[in-house]
Image (cartoon, rainbow, N blue to C red; front, side, top):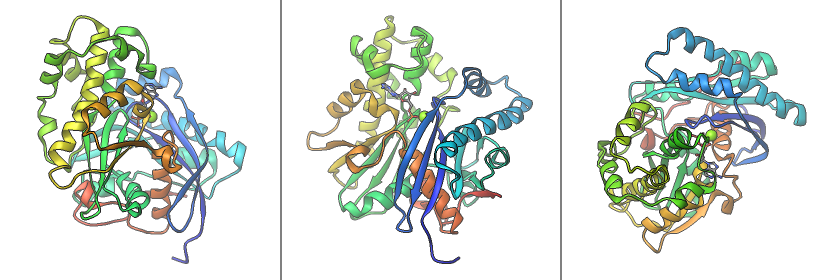
Amino acid sequence: MDEKETKYIISLMSGTSTDSIDTGYCKVTPDLRVEVIDGINYPYPENVKEQIFNLYKPDSTIQDLCRMNFVIGECFAAAANKLIKKHGKPDFISSHGQTVYHIPSNSTLQIGESSVISARTECMTISNFREKDIAVGGQGAPLVCFADEKWFKPLKKNIIVQNIGGISNSTVILNEFDTFGFDNGPGNMLIDYCMRKYFDKEYDKDGLTALEGNICDNWLNLLLEDEYYLIEPPKTTGREYFSEKYIENALKSAPKDPKDIISTLTALTAKSIAVSYERYVYTQSAIDEVILGGGGAYNPTLTKMLKYYLPKHVELKTHEDYGISNNFKEAAAFALLGYCTFYNIPNNLPSCTGAKYRTVLGKITY
Ligand SMILES: Nc1ncnc2c1ncn2[C@@H]1O[C@H](COP(=O)(O)OP(=O)(O)O)[C@@H](O)[C@H]1O
Ligand SMILES: [Mg+2]
């Protein structure tokens, strides 16, 4: 391929929280830096969100799945078209899709048909990044580590880039070692589930409910005994493991007051992250800094708890401290992954995903 050029890319990302399609109008330069020029959090229509959650239930059918692939494709295209209206057509679109199934080292599926996106926007669309990593022996996740390494390794510090989305995941960037990454466990997912169940709210805005409740240490310790926390990285997880069944089962031994449940689940999110550092990071190296991102970074009760559970010398920063929007960080990362696919540059990081070798992820729909 010719010399690399600067590309304008609309990046589309929706995580396990299913809270919105994060849509970034990004400029990617040949030095692999990404600037998010504009971004919108495009919410799914309420009925679509409900149908996505229904897909995770055991009684969902193959027909539901096929239909939703096209419905979500339309939603992603609508999100992209909003930014196209404002900024004109990008060079191409990079779409992560909506994860509906993720079983590490076995299979993964992101839907939101790229043919629909490309037809509605009349833009080339790059999509389906995870499958190729699984095909070469990896877990298909975490993929954002690739961008984290490009952006943060040059700082020459010992850093953990900590995302707290539906699931929480770390990219560990150490001066003297290869970058590695893993999912810590449930991020906001359990909190969101219980906010819906007990308070009829989508999430615990600004951590106010958690702030009003008390942490129940017995329940917290019981939850922390889950075997996922003991698996050595690389490891990834999702709604298949931390499922409705899992949480309903866990709630059998929960405290009575729903506010205490939210406090304790917030503490679980924070402490499971801190404990994973003790087990899998500090055994290799001390850390100077944690860079926080994802929706959980906006929950001050959660970030305060995390600070409390971390060693005192560790500095807690956010992506914004480095000029990267927290809100569109993952969208920015998928713009970079798409840029690499376009130029045939390997864009998986085997030390993070467990893949046997570096390869070019993604499929192109013209
Ligand atoms: N102001 C806020 N206060 C508390 N929690 C928040 C706030 N903003 C976002 N969140 C949490 O972040 C989640 C979305 O995080 P996100 O990084 O988009 O996750 P995902 O990648 O799984 O979509 C929401 O579901 C919510 O739990
Ligand atoms: Mg989200």
